[in-house]
Length: 80
Image 1 (spheres, rainbow, N blue to C red):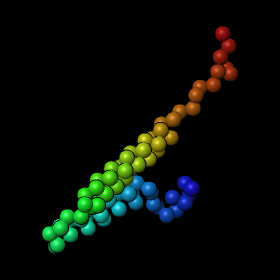
Image 2 (image 1 turned 180 degrees about the vertical axis):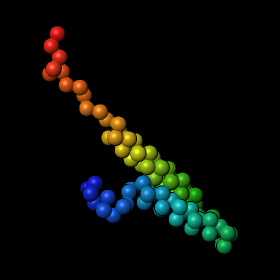
Image 3 (image 1 turned 90 degrees about the vertical axis):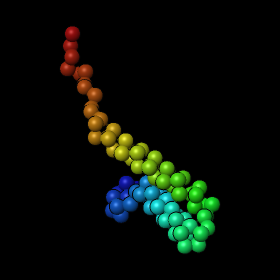
Image 4 (image 1 turned 45 degrees about the vertical axis):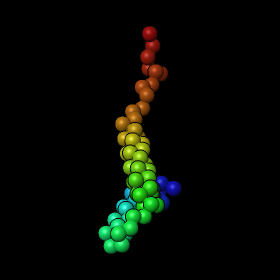
């Protein structure tokens, strides 16, 4: 699964962020052009953006923990 994500360059967080921006843009366009506010857009935009940002934070934290993980020192050479 990780290889599939690397090949396509797509991450779940990016998809949620793009969806949130798209729904938000649609809501703003509807408000400007039609003078009507979409109630779904008001709820969906912050929800999608929040989920996307949370997933992005978790992805970065997971990547950082893999990079900073150090192997435990072996105790096989210690003879006291």
